[in-house]
Length: 153
Image (cartoon, rainbow, N blue to C red; front, side, top):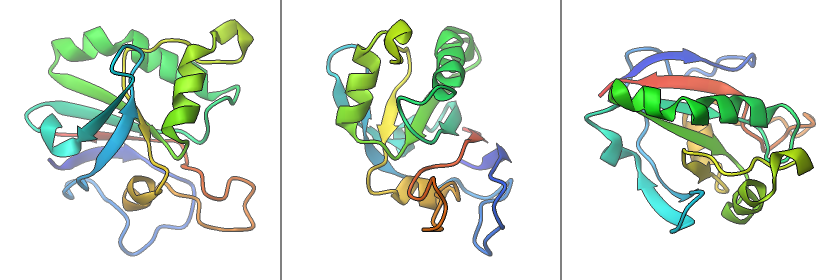
């Protein structure tokens, strides 16, 4: 799967940063789903054959993140019509993700969503995609920046 396009971070570009037409990094990770099984494993290689929208966000339980996640979730059926899977990634744990989807939106949670939330606690995926904030003086140190990657089949 090749990286078709990206809307990446406003941080300095590393020499090994992803660029369009470069092969998207493979990963295997725990994901949280709104329905049982709540925890499952996603191997990005299983998404081959479909387009993929892989988007990163900083943290669960923040006021901005739910709007973009809900918008993607609401559009999952439209994406499916064009052979596209949607996956969200943050560096939060699977337990934080689960609590967030179990908390109602009007109470600061995300509520149920129709897409998997990747728990990138190792930060390997965020780092591989150039989305990890690694400056320990940054208030978001250890979090993923917002970014969207469109990956071809």
